[in-house]
Length: 400
Image (tube, rainbow, N blue to C red; front, side):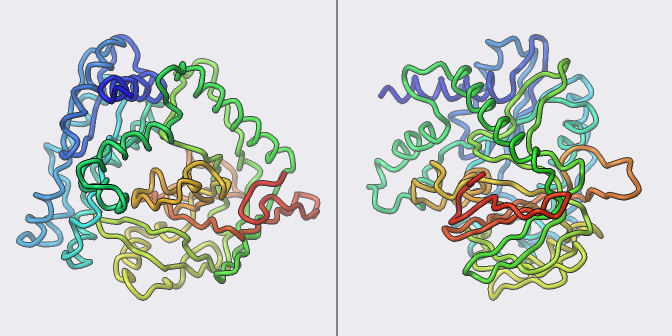
């Protein structure tokens, strides 16, 4: 494998399949500073597709870590006027945007939870500027990964350090369905069709409730609305794009006030650069009323208190436990990849726009945080509109 050529093909996949950059369109980029070698490769592919400008803002978490030691919590959380203006100006010009994330799981190990939470709050608030544009302006957006040395060494502990980064690149390419000979546009179009068909099959049952159970103590009921559709077709006049690469999920938004019971996470959640493991939530009437965790409890309690709606669910997503990402037998310590190894839920903002229906409510919040709940023994039973029970997942996998 010629890795340089494959990096370029990966960049093309992100620009063409992910963002689907249009001629004359600006591209707004948030990129991990540790991935600066890849960012120009991606930018060039955007320009080849006709981008008018590629604006790169680097996320410098090492410096944010230093700042959090000396600045007040309020100052760390604050989004400065110039941060908003430098993004909003390009969004007003019709920009699409991408997050090219990297992972350094050890960076925040020695940072107190309160400081890590302030770093997360600031970063997430800046990203909300772009999220609002995706909702209001229907602009394309994408989240993807850049392999980094620290990340590679952390998750590939059995690989010699000098080989780890290249091996991580090879692994990521495989998870993104990119090889030396395939047509990535056709490959991803076929994946889109398959996921759409599965989503429409789920929708055909008109489920109103989903009951999750697993041996780890999970026993949760989630209510769906008549508008909760897993099979999504973009409007005919919309620019088609792929928001996450890689992805295996089909997803929808539940009724805001209809979640009850206990759910336990199956994979770590990384917030503010800190990894939180072995946690869960207890819900009543849609809202988190108890955080179940021995470590990271302060961060999780701060998360569900970010605003008045942060403790409600905004997303329900189905992923086979035996998905390609799960079968790699690696915990990636990044939600983008780990959520596609497992069924997951998201706290906070619902997908799409609010409903104009007095009987049903979708959640709205500053945050949208996915956490993984899929296990090898996860069972999900759906209850249809007419009261019939149908098994949707059994032994962790889709069975409809």
